[in-house]
Image (tube, rainbow, N blue to C red):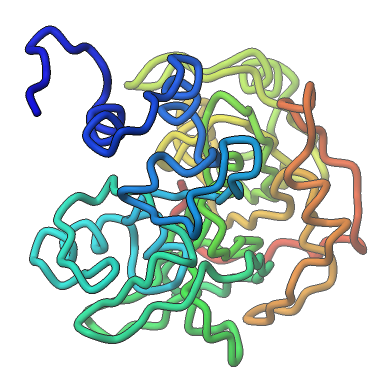
Length: 319
């Protein structure tokens, strides 16, 4: 059999032609390129018993191999890509070197010969990070991390955003990459609220106005912020940008260096009465509020927990 050199179909359609099966319509090919959920691409690659018709073919939820390994708790997506490149991952007992290979629970995936279970159930924890704890999953120097504070959880968690070691307050931990992206990507403008104790004397109205309208930093003007004066030298600052040490730099720029900083709200979730070092798993209603919905890209922060604790006056450094 010979194939025309001018054949313009995909490799899947070529396989179908070799097998004597019709090529997939253009719309079907386009859908496969843009969606993780599609009918099986080709029964040469994904055999189906008795070769069912397109109308009766089962629908499978496909996922890129590196993403599948990350969701299964094997490693981070980047580490999973390295494992794949090293030839340590097999699909259907065949070594696969392409991290973009589409797989699902029926693909019989193994790492170093050990079968991999399916993707983990998504979970999110709220943690009141104490001072001195690092916002990372692991530390090569053995210092305490936010992940180490979450009880007996066996799933691979990672922090959503970060708080510097010398800052305290609310931080979220999850294995849900999509939710983490939604909460941290600047386009979603998810607000984060901080209770800040500052030095430099009384904070005047003109200073508050500058913080509210925007402050020029070395990396450009900040977006308008919500500022409330809670007490002498204590401010409540809400921002939706994610610049490095932004709150500290804003206060420094207007002549009021930060003495202590505590995050008291992340999106629609408030710290409440969660004790320092304590964590709790979020409920389904709380997760729904965090995820939001269509047309809910810019979140406000109505309370869904108890009142927040006051900030502890300690020297800190915060992003």
